[in-house]
Image (cartoon, rainbow, N blue to C red; front, top):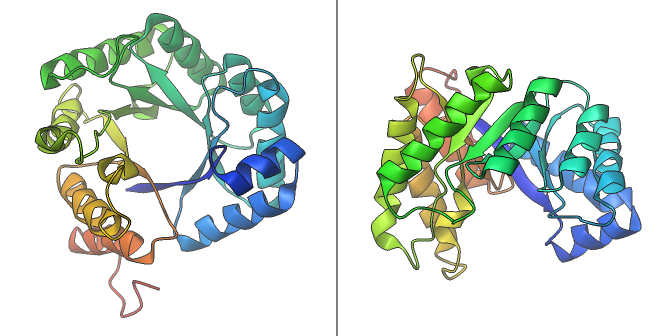
Length: 259
């Protein structure tokens, strides 16, 4: 399973300030820490970035990849910013994200096809996240079909069922896991799936968040989850990923597997 580091986000006070001031230090330090912690890809979230996004995103990509050899997930709804970042990215990028909303789907899948990038497909439309699991699956299928129109190989698509917080939607927690199973069945071979893991514990007390994230991730991996946007600085959370890989014979056991 791929670990996508979630920490480089404009909503962080320190990182948001560093982005605004083009201060590479805190950003590079956090990038290195996440890779050391076990991240395979780093998500760089600049939000809508309506004014300077077309300058900020390529600066971030070049700054991080100039300091560390890693793949990046470019996270913005600003299409111009997304493309400028893709132009300078070294290797295979990830686009975060397309959705079932027609304009966003076509724009982001078009970029994914043009730049041979992985792309996250969110099971939602302009109306929001459907309550019904079958409706979310139908949206996922529309994204799958649109990939063919834009020259995106299905192995480059990661479907996201959109996990809802257990604090306000407890009855939907198991639906998220079931969605991971259902999305894989939309194609043979099975499609990739991804979640924003911290959504499950959003709004819960700080002391509760770690156990909710760790147990839910383990359940999702049992259902076949391909990737998670998560905190790679949580050593025990990363250890859960490694433990499941060991049980599946995807990783060789060693006494130091948690290090």
